[in-house]
Image 1 (tube, each protein chain N blue to C red):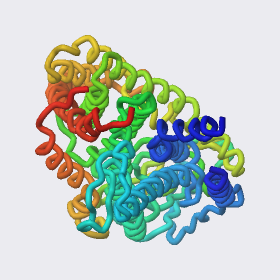
Image 2 (spheres, each protein chain N blue to C red):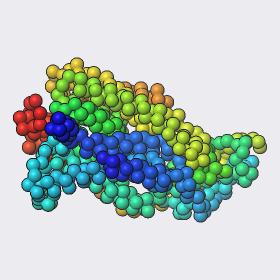
Image 3 (tube, rainbow over the protein chains, first blue to last red):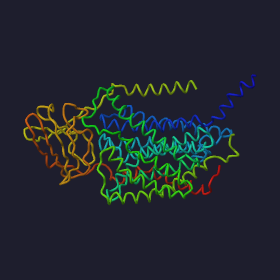
Image 4 (cartoon, rainbow over the protein chains, first blue to last red):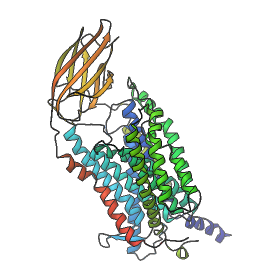
Length: 365
Length: 173
C-alpha cells in the first residue's frame, strides 16, 4: 500500500516533465500579445501614457515572465550538468554550451531567454530614443520594432520548447497556441515595413502574408498531422475574436478607473485584432486540402488569398478605400510569390524544429 | 508549489499596486505660442517644444479665446501643397478644456501650414498658421537607428542558417 501511494505521484510528475516551464514561457508570450493589443487600443481610444499603465506592465511582464522561466531552466540544467546528473531533453531540447561550457542551455529556452534579454536591451534603446524624439507612441519607431522583434524571438523559442514535446498531448496543444501567438504578434512587427518607400506594392500586406504563411507551415509541419494547420488557424481566429471585444472594453474600463474620458473621435474598430488577416482560416483550409502538394503550391495560394482579401477586410473594418487596380494586382502577384517562398521556408523551419526532439527510442514513454 | 503561487500573487499585487488610478500623467507644458485668426475666432496655438524638429513628438494645443464649448472644426497639416493630415479638432487627452494633438510629430522637415476651419456660435471661419518651420530630425541618421533596431532579426536569420545546415534530413515519427 505504502509503495503504491508513493509511486503514483512520482509517475505523474515524470509524465508531466517539461510542462511547467513550457507553460510559463507560453503564459509570458500570451501576456505580451494581450498587453500589446490592449496598449494599442489604449493609445487609440484614450491616449495619456506613462511607463506604468496596466497594458504596458502586462506587455513588459510577459517578457519578464518568459525570461525568468527560461533563466530558471538554463540555470537548473547547468547545475545538473555540472553535477553529472542526466538532463532530460524533453525540457526544451538538447542542452548546448553557452560561453564555452559555462552554461548548459536547452536550445528552446536559450532562444526564448535570449529574446527576453534582448527585450531589456531594446527597452534601454527605447529610452534613448524617447530622450531624443520625445515620449512618442509610435508603434513602428525603430526601437519599438527592436522590442517587437525581441518578443518575437521569445515566441520562436516558445514554439521550439513545445516542438520538442510534440508526441505529448500538452506538446501538441502548446505548439498550436504558441504558433498562433507568434503569428498574431508578427502582424504588428511587420508594421516596421512602413519604413520602406511607398510604391506599387503594399509591403505590409505582402509581409503579413509572408509571415502568416511561414508560421502556419512551420507549426503544421512540426506536428506533421492532418488538421494541424486548421487548428492553428482556428486558434488565431478564436483569439482574434476575443481580443476584438476585449481590447476596446479593457481600454474603456481602465480609462473609467483612471477618471479619463475616451477620445472625442474614436477609430471605431479594434487596432491590433484588425491587423490579423481574417482570411487565415481560408489559407489553413487550403494548406489542409493541398497537403500532398509541394509546400510552395499552398504557400502561393495562401499568399495570394491574404493579399487579395486584405483590402476587403480593411474596407469592411476600417472603411479604407480600395487601392488602384494596378497596385492591387501587383500586390497580389508579389504576395503570391512571397507566399510560395514562405510555404517552402515554413516547411523547412518545421523540419528544423522536428530535429529538436530526441530520437523516439531514447524518449520517455 | 505554494511558494510559487505566493510569488506569483505577490508579483501581480505589485503590478496592480504600481498601476493604481493615482498614476499621474505629465501635464501639457506649453513653451511657445502662435496666434491665428480663423474668421471670428481668436485661436492660440501652443507647442510643448520649440523649435520643431522632424519626427520629434510634442503636444500641440489649439485654444479659442472663449473656449471650445459649442464649437467644432477641422485641422489640416500641409507640407508644401500636400495635405498630410486632415482630422477633426478633438480635445487634448491631458488638457481637456482645449483642442490638441497629444505626443504628435511632424514627419518631414520643411515649411508647414496649419489650416483651421471652425464653426461655432459666431458662424464659420477659416484661418492658417503659415511658415511653420520644422528643422531636420535630431539624433543619429535613421539608417543607423534601423541597423541597431534590426539586430534581433539578423540574429534570427543567423540562427536559421546554422540550423538549416545541421538539419538536412527529415525526421520521421
